[in-house]
Length: 140
Image 1 (cartoon, rainbow, N blue to C red):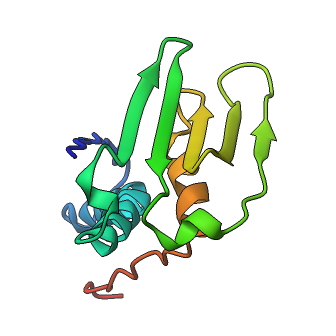
Image 2 (image 1 turned 180 degrees about the horizontal axis):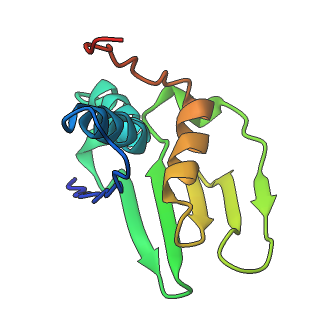
């Protein structure tokens, strides 16, 4: 399984008189917030390793031509296979739509072009994966 995500973030720094330190702190905070669900997904996947789950095509993230995202996660071989899931259906017009469900042993999530992180978040919240806590190492 290979998933490659390279988020690019840019922040405008108007009136930053901290010699760039404030902008760097903001960049770090935004970067950490942007990849939290990706880190949570990596943790969840690594916790499944060694069992039946990681022996096949267990996780798939694809783009849709609508445009949007599709996430499919095989639950067979995990403790989640027996857990109930309340279907999420938010089919608003435009790019904000999202639909998540569990069907035939798979978590399936689809959504608009800016909904990938939220889809992953719904899966991970349901799976019970906690977000990592980032330590603050700057002067306050």
